Image (cartoon, rainbow, N blue to C red; front, side, top):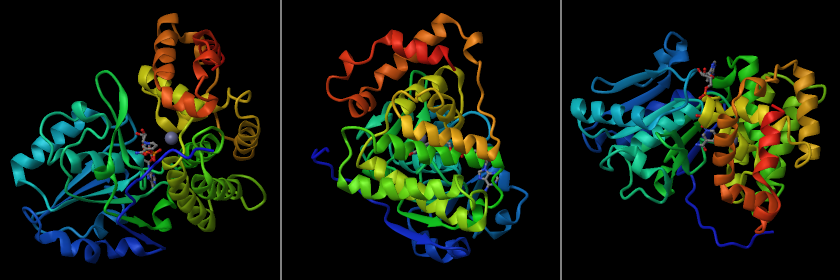
Length: 362
Ligand code: NAD
Ligand code: ZN
């Protein structure tokens, strides 16, 4: 149990419940007098031709950006370009609203910060590097699992690393948790992103950095995930959409006061080298980690089986030694995750060759 001093900012305000998205307009109205008096909406482009697009509380000066989130994960260059374009066209907005999954929410968080901090987002990837608060920012998840709605990081892929802009200012001023919004998530994506939450819980609850505070959130979130993915009432139902949305939130909070572990370390390596998306990358890695997380991986395999999900295998036969070396280097570079998972003397417990072997089994 960790007694390390940790003192974090929480989300400013949180609306929860079906239909709460309809209140977005009144929620942001008091902010509209700030800066140049307009809002930027970052919306996952899945919604471009869906009813949600008609429900956006857009006023005349506002700017709506529909962003494709089904390909590569958010990039530093993408944030810089978007920021430059917004400032050139309308000056500093009153606020930014991010509507979508981890990708759209992270873009909104990073954009909010980069609107007020000079230079490239590359120089702010890391802990507490941001100098000034960003503009007011709102997060509206439309898929559950990443915990990006509560976390203090905006994960970006830059030229040399995949790393979050992490600080108090990153945290959303307001979030709206409306389980109606997740009803349309395709089954595979529902599984992969939901497993991000489950794996967050397993990792946060297995290791040295947890404490009673993170356990309260972590075990509750894990229980909710098990209700959603295992047992007779499992599946994509309205009630389970509610449970998974709350689990994602609590899993994120659990992590803040604990740490992710070996699966996330390996998954970051995979994503960096091959661009594999976070949710599925975690599933590919977790599938091979029974030795470290026996109960979690056993339950995971049951979930995979119950929902008939395809977890890619046999990938490593097409990988070069160089690629495996690079992934291993990235994974072992995430020392805080290994420290949490294996303890302060983790370096004596894990050889690079061991990690390479795990990658070779994928
Ligand atoms: P995502 O945002 O990448 O979206 C995945 C897919 O789901 C997209 O194709 C999107 O269009 C679709 N989608 C989203 N909502 C939908 C809906 N309601 N109906 C139909 N389709 C919908 O998915 P994600 O897994 O939530 O996010 C992954 C990203 O989050 C990665 O970039 C990862 O690095 C980041 N992440 C961030 C944190 C954090 O704390 N900031 C934590 C974990 C992961
Ligand atoms: Zn994750």
